[in-house]
Length: 118
Length: 118
Image (cartoon, rainbow over all chains, first blue to last red; front, side, top):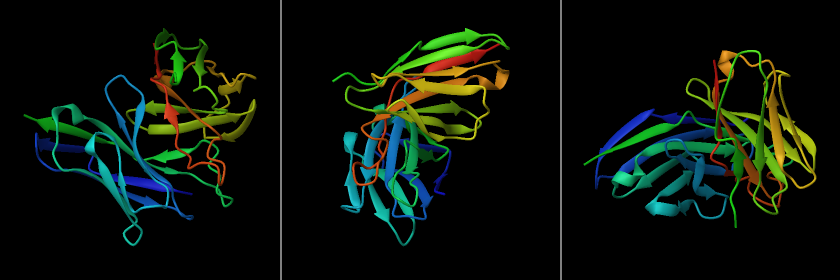
């Protein structure tokens, strides 16, 4: 079974500073990995996904993530934080069976709340 | 293209009652998954439906059930409500639920139904 660990339940940065949110995964098969963002009282919005093409993945709102198989990591970064980036971020892995089908199941990390200070 | 629509957005019930939540997937999506989100347990997979059949199920008691209609719309039901069922219930849709070789398992989420049990 797959699992995801997000290091740091809360991250605080200043506006304009680098954002780094950490995610490590465990998977018995080549993983598909995702980052989602959740704003208060809303659902989850897909930021970006890794699907075994390029290891550096660019997403929406200036975010990107790098897949590192040797470190089993998929950390999310943004060069310059904006006040509007304040939200909760979830890393997720597609929970695939041996045949490569996930049947609608993602395994999520516990989430990281990002606070951006002026 | 309209996104995933969930109704109702908010509801309050008392212990012992039952509740039905509705989800309309993105047009053309045949897979619908349900997740429960709580502060303590995070995001947990409930079940997935594809072509009116439940294909995958998480570790929830039998009080949690669902169904899918021929137009891919889905409902989930929780009977004999308990205080611990208070949560945000998220519905997500995808083309095929992450079928091997067809897509990467990414899910598109609705805004959720927030259930409070008193």
